[in-house]
Length: 448
Image (tube, rainbow, N blue to C red; front, side, top):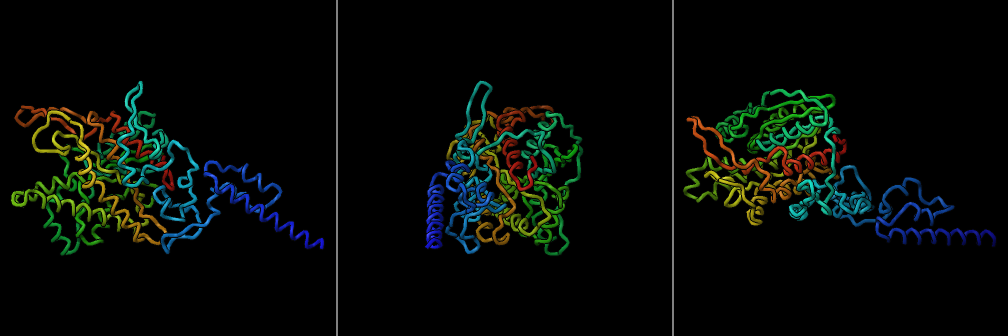
């Protein structure tokens, strides 16, 4: 009888502990504290110290949406905030349980398309000027450039070069001297007859890949524990090239970062329209320009798909970040026109949406396709993250370089507004580098 009574008391105690655990887990995640859990477990050893420190949802069941998912909530190393509602393997991460700051703790690079569209509303003005705060959408942490380390390469057109030079200046301002030198730009080549024929057919496209009207060569800058690199790339390589040729080009492009703790920050898009205008003038006259533009956008989409496919099978490559294309603010729709503009103008919402659909949405959609099909292997994400640079800069038409008066060969000058590039010290440029430093600090091997 004594033994039976002891067993009954133990069973009742176990039921009481289970009831208390369910009650605690039913609370909002930010209300669950270690003391609340310990209160119900005093004198017992049901949970280990590790379980107490983890998010309580690690103990809960989860309904998987894929055969590759788990049935128990956990937090895998590759999880990002955008995975919270899609993967049980990420359901217990702090970003998913809300255990972090209410003001916004999510990673801006992990936002979905709808969340990104709200970012243009986050500008605030105080006594020192305009400042950007994503607020509830995500957290853009203030990272001191003095913390930057490892190897970072910016790959893109003149916008990327302007950002690179602003980043170099920011690092120098915090007392880290950087020695910079021009280097040779990697060249696209092919050793097969079919590949050579394609390159000949796409000769204007290949020439425009690295065309530089502003004289900005590829650059390497080095300091103790840090190397910064810039490589020109207006257009991604022709996606029809053999995979081996594409791999060789990107291997040469990323060579300073291969096998090291490095990150490549890519951006492309605007030059596809320039290529279509230049190489399809006759077709434009016949088809009103729509057919030529669609061909340029097709090459853009296919180029992004090819890059993602290679990244999934290239373990020696650096981690990849993609900076969204930034908006232009030319009068009459935002995008650059041949006629000289006198000023930069606010961008209408409909014009902003059209540009975003052409130059940003294809990248986000390609990333989702590679994620959904598991091309990088079961449970693994494509090693590319997208910095939300477009919508935050839509309201910043006053931050461009503005009216410029370049001298012509004959000595005459013609003023026109530069509504593409951002002033190095502008709030817009500050946001671009803040997005970059914040993303570098959130990588599995942080570089800031």
